[in-house]
Length: 233
Image 1 (cartoon, rainbow, N blue to C red):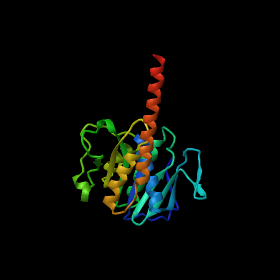
Image 2: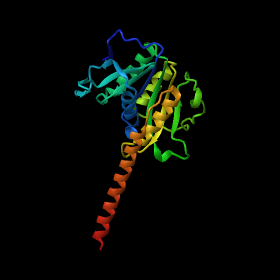
Image 3: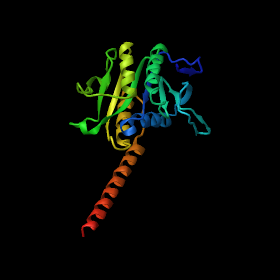
Image 4: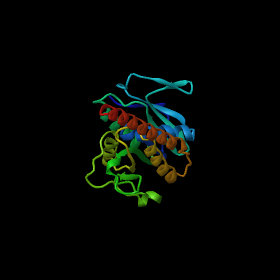
């Protein structure tokens, strides 16, 4: 089973691809979705896979397929609305990595989450890169992921394959909560990419979402404590 890009005439030579997936804090998925919305990127293709999850939805009055490609200027965004079936998902992402290389993309940025319990300084992310990628600008000074720390899931599959194919790729892993959605981590990843690629995206909405979640967690913890105290009074 192989993936197919529709339309086949889509041209991606010399472009940079940005993508992210459902993982820690849902950081990658929400970053890609937010960037597509705020930048006004337009759909330029869909990715067909024979064992795709049997679901669909609508977006702006049209069918939104599970795997879609959007473009804004020299940037292409790959949005994965729902992961492929287990046991097929790793094959899918390996195939997609090969598509990136064979289509002539310039480079690939993978967005992911990193367990915030590993955070030991004031930085908001760690950088992981393939041997072929040479960081420039602010990424040249970014802290690399510590040796021995493990990456799992689609980001790991794609980094492994892109390393094998000697392709320039890097991953921005923003520190995120492993217990819930983390809009603050999404905002941190977007800030890194916006500075690197020179676009402007207002992350105020994400930060407000993070404040709301924090307040709700505090409220629930307070309620639980009150109920627990009542048991013993």
